[in-house]
Length: 125
Image 1 (cartoon, rainbow, N blue to C red):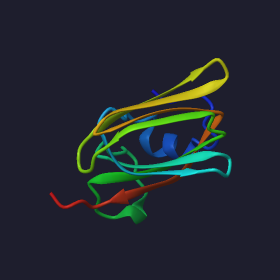
Image 2: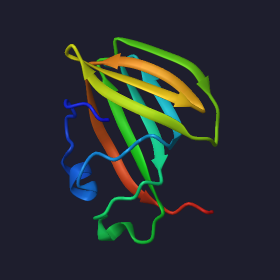
Image 3: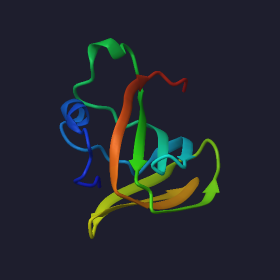
């Protein structure tokens, strides 16, 4: 599930036709910054878009970077490498809530989310 208050969802909706399922992604980076304050979450998904840009060339995964701005609370309880996590985001009482369970366990409350980057990625098998 994705929240309604995404600042710039057009590219995402164009290539996927909807909001992609994030129930099995590999979290590669979580950067917390006092400016904003914000959290930049980087992850890789193997759920491929149905209409990818031609410039991506051959790819078998998609790299995402999302910025969660106006962070009010954050909790990081676990951060393992090279395993899957389930990411859920939703709107609740004027805020966006995020939970991540699996190899990475984190939760946050923020004001809004921005899509910073979506790109094709060729991963070795």
